[in-house]
Image (cartoon, rainbow, N blue to C red; front, side):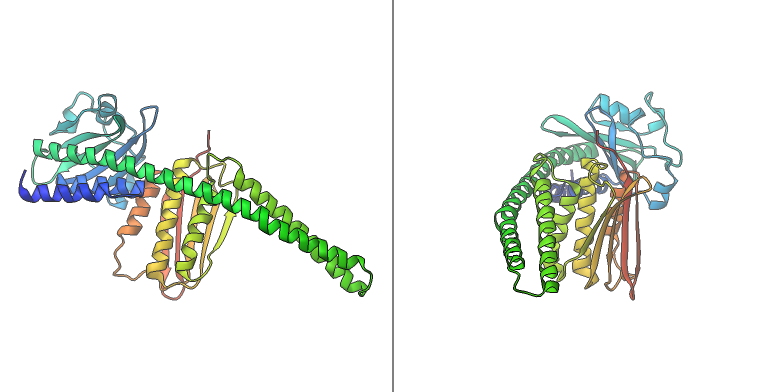
Length: 371
């Protein structure tokens, strides 16, 4: 391996290992493997407990090519062989292998192939797929060795990212319990005491009747507020093993509010919690984080709204800001990443922007009911 390629490999490994967000890490793995092996296309097939390809992250395919495909690869043929026999596979022509199954309708033609498993603590997490070696008829042993080393580093990075995610979730649980305690011990008791004082004033009979009516109405409103807060406490302290999508969205928006200079509005429509799998929720929150970051760094927005809804069989995240819009010459790598996240779940990502109206970003994926 040349000194230049060794340096590039080391840099890629360090970039991957230091990743924190799981799906950003996965995207970097696919991109690094594609560049280092001089492949035209790269992908990572994530395998579920049943041994099927659950998600397919890809690199190098134009959105037009993706749109032409009937469906993402499902783990048959050569991909299925890598799943059942997780060892590196290097081929000069995919179609000549006995296990070849063909491609989905609309899939671009591919010939040379390199497949390498990605393991996390000895368990197969997925497989890296590289196709169409550029400048040569097939991938080399050096390519295979280099991608194998990257896959080993990827396994460690994925494990670290999962641990970091678990730690963040634990912190969320602790914050939730602290907030519930504060709501009960401070807010409810204060509201209850105020309501009692208002009732006592109303009973004295020394103020006009119309004022008494207003005082009793205010006391009733306090009772309603207490009931709502108690319901919130209940929501915060039940299902201790999970954090709802609704709560995760609120947490992200609250975290960015001081940086944005204003409090964004948040709207939920439909049963977004019960109809969303953990994986979809994780992706939606990552997309929301990216869009909030864009609004903070680039849009110069003074108002921002977030809507999460169930619509036409999809979970839809819409983020609207009144900022400067997306400049025509701006880099779109971040938006392309969000589009890839949607496409990996058979969804869509659309953005409309204009200098005088701001930006509207809509990320939608099919509803996946929790089992």
